Length: 85
Image (cartoon, rainbow, N blue to C red; front, side, top):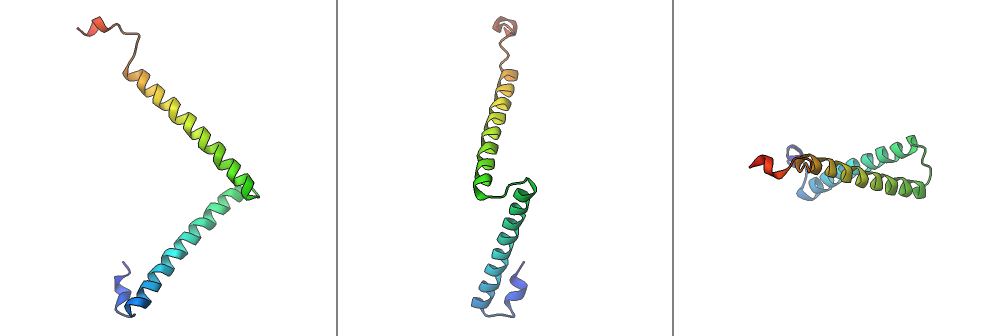
């Protein structure tokens, strides 16, 4: 998408332009992430780390529950094996 601007700059300047745009996008994403933490009431990086650790643990538990629910559905032990023969 940025190739259009390449003809107006030297290759080095164009590379700097592209790197600058990529860096800007990363900074904007980080700012949005920090805004989300602020919205959640987190004020220190220690609180953010604690929040992320709790979230990771909850996600693991949720994934295990979902996996167990799916596997119990697929392999229902209540139906005797002879019924399928």
